[in-house]
Length: 299
Image (cartoon, rainbow, N blue to C red; front, side, top):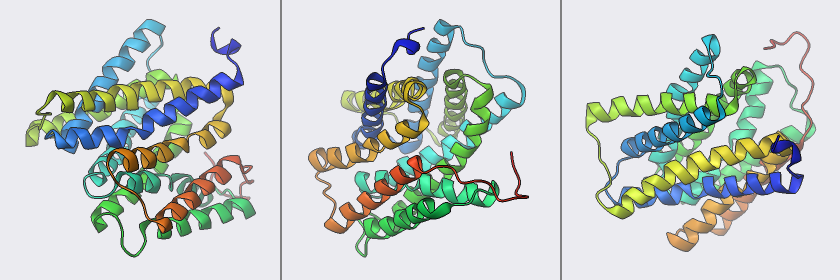
């Protein structure tokens, strides 16, 4: 099999390229908005095109589709979790700096650690506790007393991190009994259906220029299909821990591109705060999972 012969260096490269592709999403979205696209329409295009592309991959690979409770759970993940997270993230991009929103999303490892302690009975431990504190301290610095965006935009950026955390916890269990690629296709199709219905109800706002359509295709193909596929392949080669560390290239890419192409430089406090958030994410990805508290609810 192809993956069995892939080197660790190749797996690292796949995840890094995936993270860079994810990191460009905020820039593509901004370009699509400038062409008259609304967040809801852009999200419909993103998930609709991505679902079709992933469906082709599923057919070519002859993968089995999820069934029963797993299928229902994945549909809920896409229709509620992924749709909610994406709506919060893409709407935040219209109200706050792209770099700020990208950094706020990376609060999710700290939030997952807290939720695991509350609902799964996992002790945080010394390093995980330090990382959680560091992440929230970094958030305070990143937002700062004079935030680069409206309060609602910052709230939505943080909300995206919370929703994504719940999405990850649910997906960790559901994708154990399903192929990641076919599962991703179901999730994207469910999200596309939700945004398709909303577009019908409120009326779509498609891009008004060729550049806007290219930007929408960039969100769907580059920052969704290619990014998701490369990450799924890479994670099977190098494992989730190393992949989680390398995925921090995503917000770094967004910050750099936003500064170069959108003239959105972050202040010194925001840069230090962002470094704290990314450091916390790396600590959490490498810290050993603490044992569960006796008597705590399991899966």
